Structures are given as structure tokens and as C-alpha cells.
Length: 236
Image 1 (spheres, helix red, strand yellow):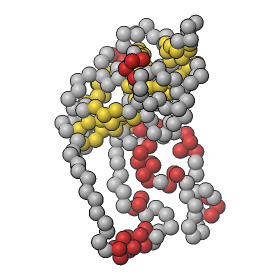
Image 2 (cartoon, one colour):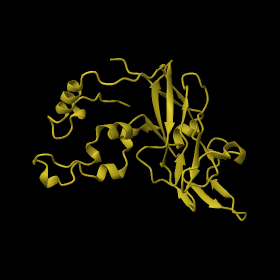
Image 3 (cartoon, rainbow, N blue to C red):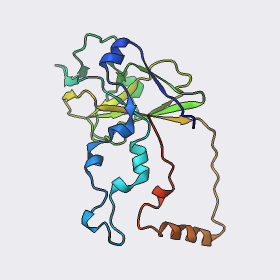
Image 4 (cartoon, helix red, strand yellow):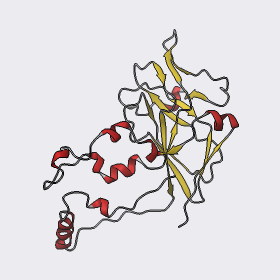
């Protein structure tokens, strides 16, 4: 079976050898997911209708493991200068490659900033050009499994089959945060998808019995009915 290819091309040997390469999100599952049991009460697994946790939720697993994670290539220091201006700096000598820029405040003056985050927008230059096959774009979102980071990335969609440059990743920093954002911190989740046109249609079920029988099929298993139907997604 033919597999679609996504190419992460480093702009410089320094990026390739010193920076952290993007990796499949499924290989970077968050600790909270790894540490939680599949069952609320593992000792009652074999009883009727055991109570399962989010770890048994296939849709959540597919979302957490979708696409690729673009990590922070090295430590970044967040602090305020003497004028209370928020700054982000690094120790590297290669600032022309790895850098943080910020938007002019006028560029996001009416943007709805997430609660608890500073309104200043920074842009992360990760140094990778992303190329997808013809007809495929990439959805960039804040990493789904990492909601408690000191940063919050802004989502976007880029036609990465045609865009021949680095996709900068804008983000906010949590209010009151100062210190180091550590090397390897997941900054963005990049999910390739095929572009297609869609239209919405609305209707009412013509045969209520069919709806009822479908619900009963779901009940034939205490849990995991959807998991037996879902198509496994692969990102390598």
C-alpha cells in the first residue's frame, strides 16, 4: 500500500545536527496519558460495565497521536526587561537561524487572547521547511496533549504542497511566567490532510427503527465498540 510522504527539510546543516527533528506525535505521548490506567478501578475489569478512563477513548488517542510534533530546538529564557517588556532569548550563536520574533501589537490588536496569557505574540522559527504531496495541506495546532505548557500556539492551515518556505509558528506566553522553556518542549502539532471541497446537507432520520438498532449494536459491547470499527492512522 502506497504511503504518503511528508518531508521536513532543514534550511541549514546546523539545524539538522543541533536542532531536534520533528517526530510523529504518537511517539511523544504526554506523561499524563502514559500514567493513567485504562480503568477507573482496575480490580473490577472483569465485572459488567467496568468504568474506563480517557485512555480507552479511541477518538482522543487519534487526536493525541495525529501528525507530527515540532519541538523547541533548545532552551529559551523568558523574562521582562527594565521597562517590563516581555523578552525571549537564547544562548546560541546562530540567531540568524534560530530566533524568536514578535508581531507588531497592531497585527493582533483585536485577536481573542486565551485567558491567562500575555497579549504579545511571538513567532517561533524552527528552521524546517515542510513539504506535502500535491493536493495536501497541513493543519498547525497547539499540541493536543500538552494543554498546561507556558505557551499557547495559534492554529493555522498552510498549503504545504505549494508554500516553499518555513512556516513560522506564532504563540502566546502565560501571564506571569518567567524562566526557561525547556529544549524539547512541544511547540506545534502539524497534521497533514488532503484538500477536498465539502458541502453540508441536513435531514431527519426516515426510519427511527434503524437508529434504534444502531444504538443497540453499540450496547452489544460494554465498551470499545467504536474501537473495533475505527481505521488505524499511521505516522512514521
